Image (cartoon, rainbow, N blue to C red; front, side, top):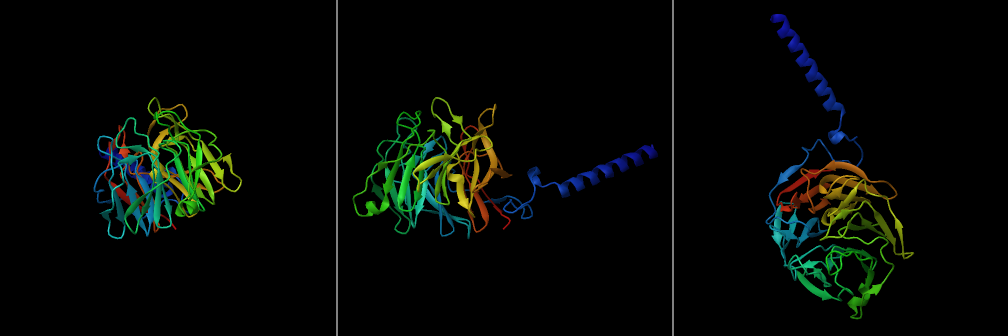
Length: 346
């Protein structure tokens, strides 16, 4: 018995040693260390106080090192007017002026110290696709109506390049037909009181709920899905619009079909980050995603980490080299109010 006990003890210590060595040489998620990778020596994700109200599919911008969160769905997939700003200096939330209407499925674009948004689903879930366009003055805490879109749209892309505001893609009034329309509003003309939306080069492959950012003066339409109410078919496609040539080109495809990450996609350090969303791997089924993806100009998409849990349509941003994640929805459209942060390697 004594010999068997000793042998078992030796085996146990050998196993422990192997596990320790594996822990030292393998990076979390099986990913190599590298510049811009998520830091592991900072305690990984840190839990912050919950949001005042859990929301998903909100619009987001960052200004003055603060995260602004507009509208979105609350518990029960109910549209909300509520908007607020998160200050990472003291982890506080401050209520700001409500949206003019309870709106979801819209992108926010920062223009100096004002925020633009256009279209969306308003005050309900069925039959409320809108053409409204608004400007929010952060310092005055005030909304101003702007020229309507030429037709109702929801889940389309909104981007600002120079003084031109671009809206493209999205869903038509039936909430299921994807549009290829691409319209431009001259903001200098708007300030002079004579602006209207004009037609531009259509989106090559119409879809909705794709992420939209501007990198190096070009507009990226990232992922998205075909249809909405009848079915939701996630796409890996990336299209890039060059305002200098008024032309679209194909960008680096995502590793898998992806949508529902509009408020968690942003540019930082000349790279695009996209957190969470819905995903459909090739040959797989649609699910809520936990991946953090990153793209450098001229490069390919990389999975650089994971969220604390799979989340659809959260709010996210990098502020002073810290990644903040708030809200979103878990599987089954269950709204979340939790919030986390973690450091990045410089």
